[in-house]
Image 1: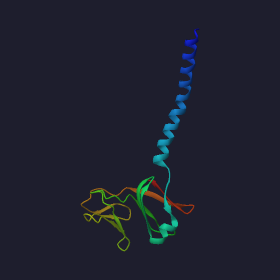
Image 2: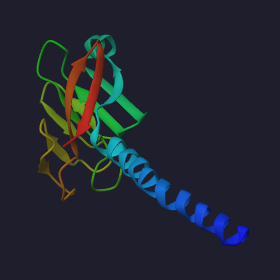
Image 3: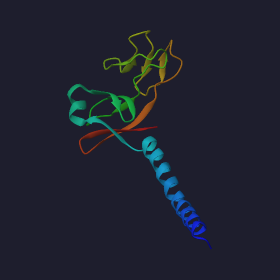
Image 4: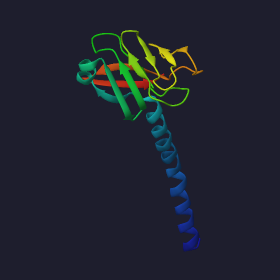
Length: 136
C-alpha cells in the first residue's frame, strides 16, 4: 500500500468515526433550545407587581401574571392580530390589546377579535427563586 493511500484511508476513518458525534451534538442543541425550561426573571420581580414581562428571554417574549404563592399564567404577549404587546387587566382577569381591542382569557384563548388566534402559552413554575417557562 502506498503512503498516500494509507493517509487517505486513515483520514476517511477519522471522518467516519467522528460523524456520529457531530450528529449527536447538533441534535442535542436543537432539543435544548426548544424543549427545556428557560429563566425569564425572579420571583421577587413577579411578586412586586403581579406580572413579569420579559421581552428578550431565551424563550422569546413572555408575560407571566400571578404571584409565586398563587396560580401563575405565562403567554407570549404578542397579539396575534397586528403584533402589538397585550396588557394584563388584573381586575377583569384578561389580556387586552391596546391597538385594536382584541381580548384574551387568562389561559390565552381568544375572547374578542379582531384577532383570530389564541396567544401562545407556556408552562410556568418557580425554581430556586427564578421564574422559568417551557413552551407547551
